[in-house]
Length: 70
Image: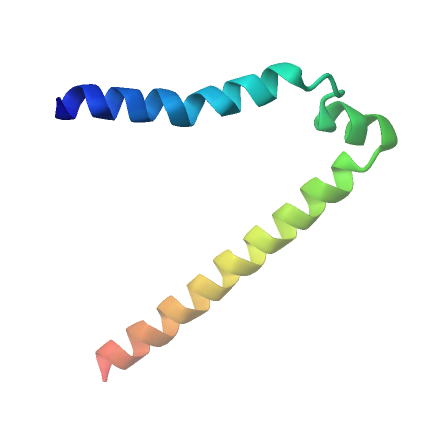
């Protein structure tokens, strides 16, 4: 009973997503942004954010290492 209930629950949660996805007839957002040249701006922002996070993690690691040595 429990296994059947889980399968039914999964099917009920996935089914609306499939139906909604099947009804949309919009162009792909990546193609839209690429045709306008905005995809490069998105990539630049994502790279900038990731580089900032990596730099922050690197500095935090150095500070922690200094504290561990003391």
